Length: 117
Image (cartoon, rainbow, N blue to C red; front, top):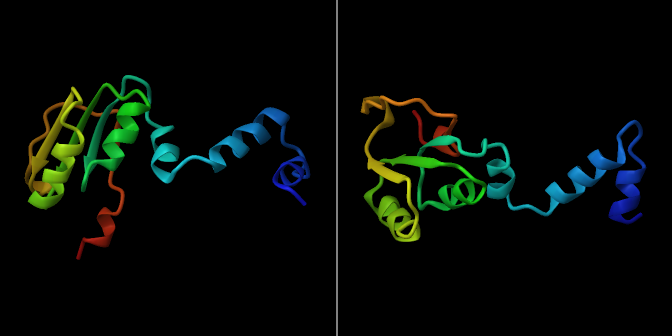
């Protein structure tokens, strides 16, 4: 049974929904996650790492991005990756100790719980 036949076999789901599910299958995990970021949204990424998520959410239409990470090495990679992007702020430190005065549309913490004790 090919992929199209599998989706067609799902009862009670419209053709549009089946197409949506099919198209989502081909997206990278970052692209799938970024699809939930509102257009013109403000994104806070706790544990931003090397900036791959930042690329995805900015490409998806986020208006601004703040990435926070403990690791200077990860932030160096993120700065290099995002050098040509506007509306990006990268902060080194513990997000629990930082004051973030503005609101955000989305707060991401992908992989953060792997590092909590």
